[in-house]
Length: 309
Image 1 (cartoon, rainbow, N blue to C red):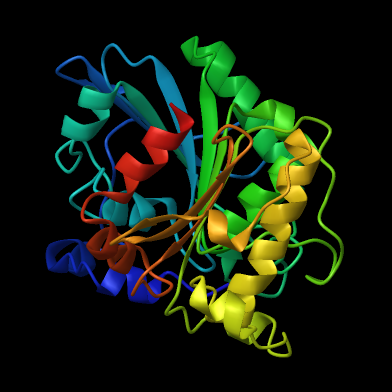
Image 2: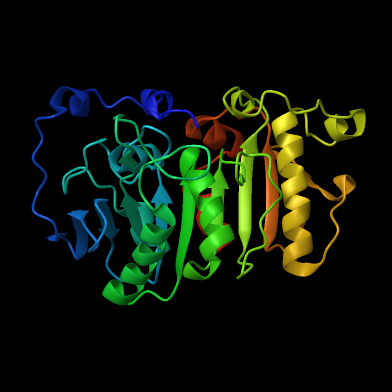
């Protein structure tokens, strides 16, 4: 998937950029007004560092996965949890987390040997780690350490692809799943859709102006006139429509229909299996988070939290 560079550049933090490599974060677990920021926590057996934003009175948790080449800090900044790409107690914006009662958990993807590109092992990108095992252990850790029975997984780009893989292979670890700019892949990206052992709720959002995703499947057939009229204007959108149909049949034996979309100014949304399986094509959104927020008319985290609630 694409790197996070353009996403971060869209919301520049010049002071943080100047401090890059010089900032020493406060000790993990430092308390601010009843809210707790834990930086760089780890789970035994895995190298991933995990940042945890824990507001007072939280009742649920969401694990957020960054994109290819990104960082947990850059994603926290882009989603609005931190006013800097280098989080500290002074930079955290607790308002949304506190109002929504959400613990935000942001792990750092790893770089495979011979590269410094931090990512996830999602069939398309490779981190050199068993990220399914790590994210399964992370869910268990969040549940036991913070007493959260309600833990969901959301990912962006390569993190979205990783979210899809966990849904396929370890769906029982999380309550619900949301992927943004991360189509579901299996094998080399052209295999059949998985049959998950636990069919948890799943929501994928793709932008209809994405110029990154077509590069990963350049030979997909062009949409038919009927598909284009329904908003599936690119081969990657049609491919995910096929996956959406497969997921709907697997989860609830429901058949999807192009004409069944809920239409809005933000895009076309297909809801199936009593709204547990959802696919949205977001109008005028490209690959990057700011364009989704512009099209949706609000924070992306509101859309994510609304689905997993």
